[in-house]
Length: 64
Image (cartoon, rainbow, N blue to C red; front, side, top):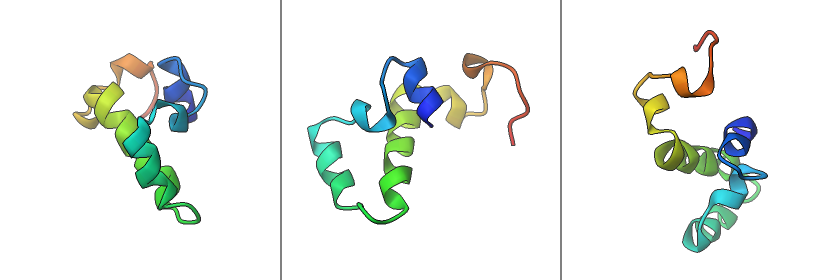
């Protein structure tokens, strides 16, 4: 998740959240959702091709 955010020019996945998304994420603090929510937003906004199974934008490898 952090590598994907960095690939789009963000220091962390939390930096790419807008104001309302940050507010929602703060409500998840202390739970696993605090990490999952930014990851979902990162994928939806910046890497929709990954959600469709196209991993060419992130390089070679063995996707799960």
